[in-house]
Length: 288
Image: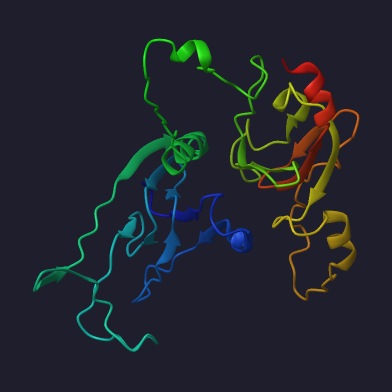
């Protein structure tokens, strides 16, 4: 790496929704300082110079920092035998006790490293990060006799076979409520300018996402899905900030969903939440 490096951290979309504004943190490190603060890393950290990007993905929350320019430091676990007077009034000494013998807690983790040319590391960080943080869930069942497949559905896909979500979009939430409505939350994985191909506006076709269901209403909610977004925007306060950058690029946001087209637009780093209502009378007439 070169002499001047910028260190970045990024967190998973499945982290706290309240901390979404801290989704990406940029640190310009003063390597002459005696102490460098560790920041929370729950998905990955990377640094860049004028030629390359060095990325590290993690499988658990760790502390991340850089004590020397061009180096990354990760704190997998912290244990102190004495109180460091930082407010908890006790030593950070987690122990595991078996019978009468106690030893310090041992933590193991996996780190995934990669070096890419400048501007090309985001694809790996976002795709591999999704696979690490949200791996496939395998489920199994027992087969009694030889006629199980004749009485059960052995394969299923709720999405149209010809359709895939865009590479820069993640399905965060798909949950059916007691009233039959479905909570749907979609997220754009990339930041503005992070990748020339994927840090752009994306769209999701709800008709293709639910091909065997008739959608009669889609209501956009706030991030926590406890009030409609339109009502929330009426209550939003407008802040006059002194000294704010004048040429800061304006975030790109998707347009309201057209009830006829049912296409959701997502700008970089945008998360949108919806309550989807289906016509179950229609479903009963077409299902065998």
